[in-house]
Image 1 (cartoon, rainbow over the protein chains, first blue to last red):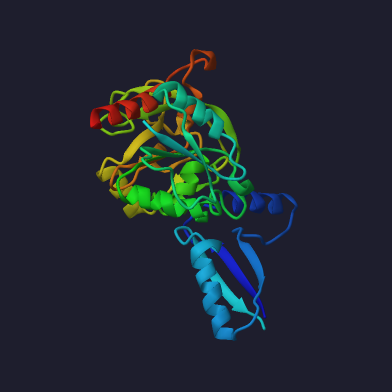
Image 2 (cartoon, rainbow over the protein chains, first blue to last red; image 1 turned 180 degrees about the horizontal axis):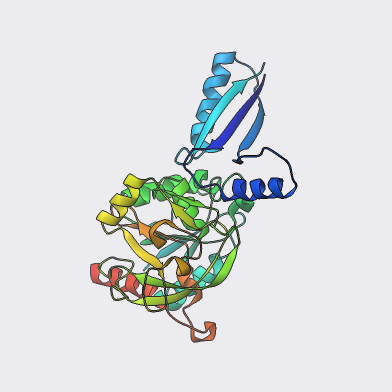
Length: 80
Length: 233
């Protein structure tokens, strides 16, 4: 089973890397860029178990390691 | 003072720390590999040194914080044992839940490697007994992620409970954004946990302990710890 965990900074947390990328996009003349926030994507393959098990395991993984919930939100998508 | 220095893959300041501990306490610290399940018996002080554990993969300190030895460090801290966490060690301690908050990318996005001035906020702790409250010390920093942040409630508690022990300052002890090199909230350079037995700090006191290093401002921290244990004995 394939899954994706997406980790993003909570709103209100300063993201200097996102700001730098935003500046670079603007300097490239890419129009319409209002703001950029940088995050992380984890593509994970799950062996055995059902969809609910996979979701539970990945939620646990995100809470324990993949995200720092002080500053980050996460989303788990099991894509099948 | 019997100390134990925790060694993770990618750490590179453990020998500086061991040298400073030996110099000031007169006793060689135990070097403890991260896969160990237990600390050496009768350890007084655990030190989590600086460096780049696991190449800063995922988040600084995130992977080291989940190493087997950290369960032993957590138990040690819960039982009141003193833990000194410097630089990457501070990041690891935050990730391990030993200290609140997070060390984010420096506000100016640059890796900062230079001497900074720190105002010592209190002297009545096991870690700062070798200094006077309000004293300014000069020690090096070397980090890309030292910008301390926490939610408003946590910052208010840290300040209200006197848990900020070191703050970035001007040479004469003024708290000024121009001397806050990494953008840390309230100029926070070092904090203790609620029980006051775990100190996390970004600067490296272990690098200013001998005349050959140019300055000896860092000695007070180690000398204060040695005194603390001598008084307790």
